[in-house]
Length: 175
View 1: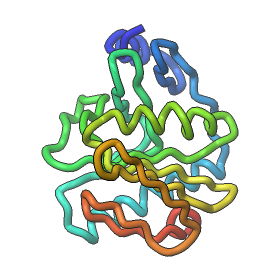
View 2: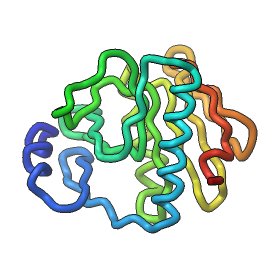
View 3: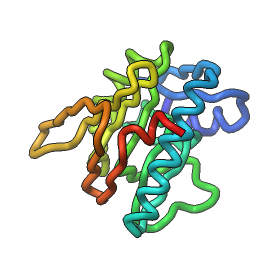
C-alpha cells in the first residue's frame, strides 16, 4: 500500500495506525503512564518554543510523517518551523524534531525502523526516544554528512539546535 492510499483508508478507520513498508500496523492502546509522559514531552516542547520565541510549533500525536512512498509514521510529538500547514492537513512535511515515547509494543520499531526512517528526511535534525521506565532520553542528532550522534541523558538539558531549543530532561518525567 502507498502512503496516499493509506491516508485515504485511515481517515475512516477507528484507532491509530502507521504504515511500515506498505503494511498497515495498528497502534496498541496506550497505558496511562505512557500518556502522561507523552503529555509532559509535548508541554515541555511547547514551553521551550515559547521561551525561545521561535516561529515553530509543537504538534502532538495524530500527525503523519511520510518517510517514503510506502512508509508513514505517527510520532508522539514533533516540532516544525516556518509557515504553518493548513488546518486540514494530516501530514507534516518538514519536521525538525520528532519524538517517540517507548512502550513495550513499540520499542523495537522505535529504536530501528523509525531511527533509520526519520533521518531519511533532510529536515529532521533530532530524534528523541523517551524511555519512561528508565527515565532517560536517547537523543539522536544529525551530524556532519551521514553521521548520527547519540547521547543518552537522564538529567541536565537537551540542546536542540536547530531550531534553538533547550529543555530540561526531567521536565519529560516530572509534573
